[in-house]
Image 1: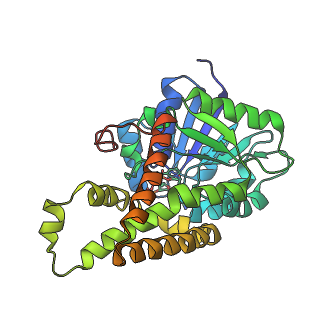
Image 2: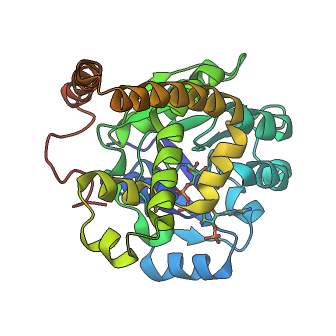
Length: 304
Ligand code: NAP
């Protein structure tokens, strides 16, 4: 594949940034990739494993001369990072981010972007429960959606060019409006994570079931919850604090449904439960048919 950007700067060197680096490098999509992370430890690890062509000692140094800057830090750190790099951005460059929430990131980053620099927010629907510079792999984005959330008035060529990069690393792309994005993600990702965190927390609280019993006899349902609930605490704290309204709305609906199921169990309304589970099974089939998961019973454990 041919080069799309001359110099790409990755700010933050965790799961998403390291996966992007390996994919971009594998396919020769950038001339040079620079990187920066907050801690000296992460920068050292990156150097040790050959992550990025050049690891810089500051975010400013990393973005100098870059025609694409990708912010790969937790959502709550976007504002500070954008403020820091803004004076060093080169005219004509594109800044994007991979944050899991879009409206809050647009509000935090947008005001810092100088005239003549394009800001094209995005979000890969790809991830694992692992984090840090060692957790990335080039195939993470293959066949996954990469959502682009351009703000009004953004230069069309800048959006097209970024979209071609996401497609070149194997993603399917679609453009979406920010508030709609946040609502969709509250349903498909944010609220399910919160439920998994809660369920694992509940099991942890049950004094009649010992810790070792929970661990030894964890059946598929609980085991899957623990995998999700092992996700990075900083990232997920920031997601909930920054997608508050949509998450609370979906949680409200979730609570109503939960009460309905609770009542069906208490009143022994087997028909209601059976109908409900038949509907949910069809949704699972739809996801498999759309190529977003496999039917393998151990999905998610082998690679992640
Ligand atoms: P991660 O593995 O935890 O890595 C985060 C990186 O950001 C670390 O290198 C960290 O540096 C750096 N960082 C944090 N604060 C910083 C700051 N103020 N300045 C500079 N660097 C800073 O995170 P990730 O999973 O790659 O997630 C990154 C972004 O992608 C988040 O916004 C998240 O919402 C989004 N996202 C994640 C997933 C997922 O499943 N993980 C999926 C889609 C999108 P240190 O190591 O030095 O602390």
